[in-house]
Length: 151
Image (cartoon, one colour):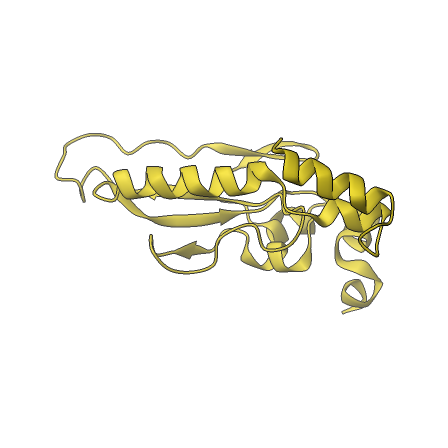
């Protein structure tokens, strides 16, 4: 971790920056910037085989509303929002490859994969809300909050 990030965290924990505790966890983490930069480079190097990107959110009861809404949405390669959407965001944007037909190749399409959820693997095409519908009421209430759950 670069010294400047460590120094700010130490200052925040001691209260020298005017806040402490949980707020210090909201400081930018070096890995977020590195991941975003690497993802951009990989995307640019493979633009000829990519059709877009898909927002993928964590499937559990701690996922923030903005990430719940964006889960499964697809965007153009050089447009649309990208994670992180908020401090400590656990979402990611994955590349969507063109089909064999779009690439001018013969071959069988790649079968659908899976993704992780708090209760095991689910098909990749399952959105956050589709997953949430199958969860017990307690998980739904925790994920949505009391006001949204009542709707």
